[in-house]
Image (cartoon, rainbow, N blue to C red; front, side, top):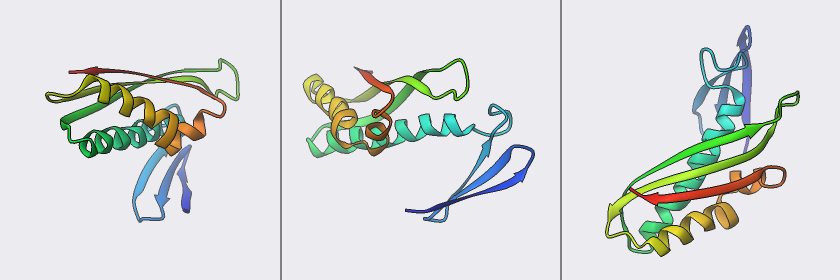
Length: 132
């Protein structure tokens, strides 16, 4: 996998993925676009949400929605890396099995989500869930 990040002006950059998609990044604390650290949170939420929806569908569950709400803590001084991240999954559907939802959300962070597993090497990764 490859990507390119090109400087535009100020502290604004364009990231281009190998698959041909682009995203604007703002190093000014997210004034005009997501900051790189916000993109890390979005990546973790997106990757784990794929696991949750796919896992529930594979288990025959009638899932109709999944919202991942991420909260984090960062160091106060540079480098301001994440020290903890929690992903709260709000899953909706028809007759969802709470045990399956619990298992699929846990498995995402502990077994399948590449982003979360990578972050877990230095960040306390936790999750919570609810059936909405």
